[in-house]
Image (cartoon, rainbow, N blue to C red):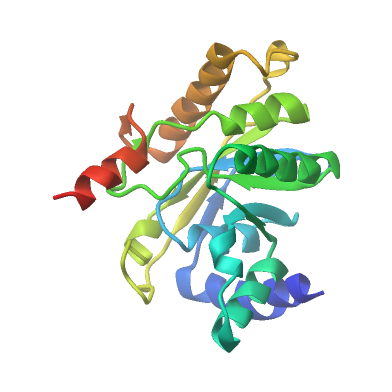
Length: 227
């Protein structure tokens, strides 16, 4: 109910009026059944804009830190995130990573839409970086198609470090669904997982127009932080 209220009566109409998003390929999202939307990640507002612009409800895996703060402000943030489809996960690695995978697979098993950022973090400079293979595992274990999604110019609306968004037009491109059923049963093969992930990133780079860099975005952020 909260999700419907925010999408249709509050946040949705406001964001459509302010940012006037143009959208192409919306019909590439299957109307029913589990599916993964694999998106580039340019800004913190990607996770707000994308769910409000599609008909089906989308679930994102969000780091658990967002849900653990105290006080009224953090309470409000927690319930807003939960109400808009964010699911808390532990990103500390090991068993936590496996738990994150299972959480995502549970969403897909219910026949719902799961949003994933294969790069694992926001791009520090607008370029596209190497994808993490977790998305490939979910695709192969969940037996679902994946739709590549390109967010356009959201980094210009709210760059990393900014607290308030700027008013300008943004776009969303939904690419044609990718079918990886040819790799069914090979989800334990790390070379297959890398191949699937790289194909997704290649398609994302094509529809977004971003320059692709074959290193992890997190590594680039670490280097920038050490300067």
